[in-house]
Image (tube, rainbow, N blue to C red; front, side):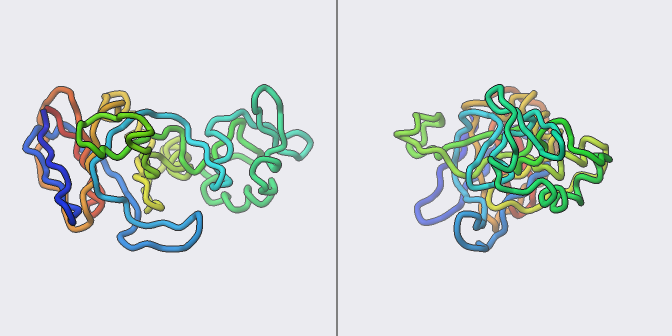
Length: 242
């Protein structure tokens, strides 16, 4: 087993285990310093030990673009953008409060790669992209999730972004940008990490502090269990194996 030590009291230092590093991926977290105020404020990706407990398509009430799940069927009905919710076509504005023309203008820069003059046939504006992996704080250090009552879910997760999704779809350069605290992955890397079970229920995640650089390494082979080490300073993830 990988022997990653817990956080020392009063520090954000995690000791990197001596174990095989089987893969590395680009990843970007939040900025080192907090910014903004209110519900949409942001800041650093919090150092600590976490456990992955599920994946899904994220829907958020406070992020208006994300009130509709990624991939929800979308149609243009006489100039009104409608989405298919629970088997019924609903005016998108009722859900997001964003006028159709306004969000098309705001997202014009990343809609261009889609090369469309009308709406796409599915909702591709969700801030969290096509897949999100959720994690919880490993409070008791037993390296598993003990349920929401014992270990509340973390409000920072792994996800992609709509601009990166668009660039991937049309084989353009994918550029990861800073988040509000979550960990951004490229869409193809998200799928690869999921397919290879690097991102999987029960796997541990170790977020290092902003002073720690990712170690130089040579890829080796290894078998499960896998764990994820994210280094915000280096903008990289190392996947460790037992």
